[in-house]
Length: 109
Image 1 (cartoon, rainbow, N blue to C red):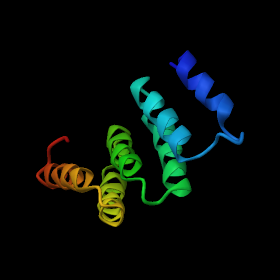
Image 2 (image 1 turned 90 degrees about the horizontal axis):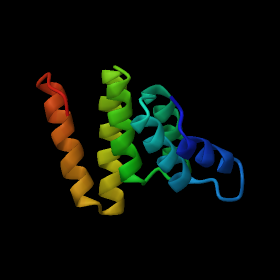
Image 3 (image 1 turned 180 degrees about the horizontal axis):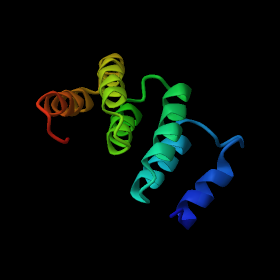
Image 4 (image 1 turned 30 degrees about the vertical axis):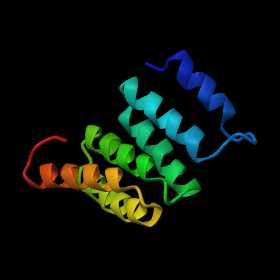
């Protein structure tokens, strides 16, 4: 169920305000409305705008896991750890490493 926030954010896509932050916000809103596949698409676009956006990689992994794409979630978090290392985001590195360990152990994040 798409809400007004999603529609408002979608209206900004393709405008001069489009970018990693907008796509991250849209992906987050879609994930919150129970649309993990659509969220993953927008979060992939966010990482396309900014490959070092560690928070987008982290949320992309969550969206992919929610969409039952375990291997893609693993890949997103692996790429996200590398992005976090490049950008110096130590906290994001730690969180994604925990997510990967839990995934490897067979649990949820």
